[in-house]
Image 1 (spheres, rainbow, N blue to C red):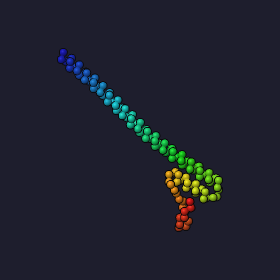
Image 2: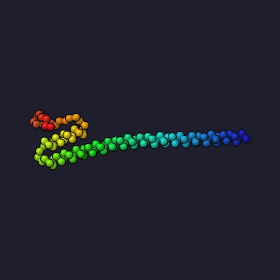
Image 3: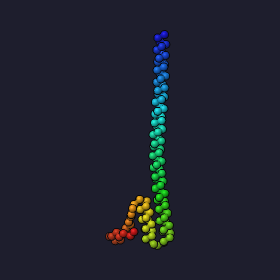
Length: 109
């Protein structure tokens, strides 16, 4: 009889350990999912930032190409457009463009 009681208690304890082990595994799985979700959210934010930057650069390039097409042979409007777009993309409050002229760098825009 004592043998059976010992086996019964051991089986019950074993069942509890199995349930606890399953619960621990479930918690670990959920933690892993949460970490994956956080990583994916960070990647999404970064991808959106990169896309926004690429779109700004494409728009600026398009504007400069339009100015080139409208004013063939005239460099000043092209340089002004380049400077305006570069300042906007860089979120600068102002900008200047210099052109090497011999040993000097006079401001052109």
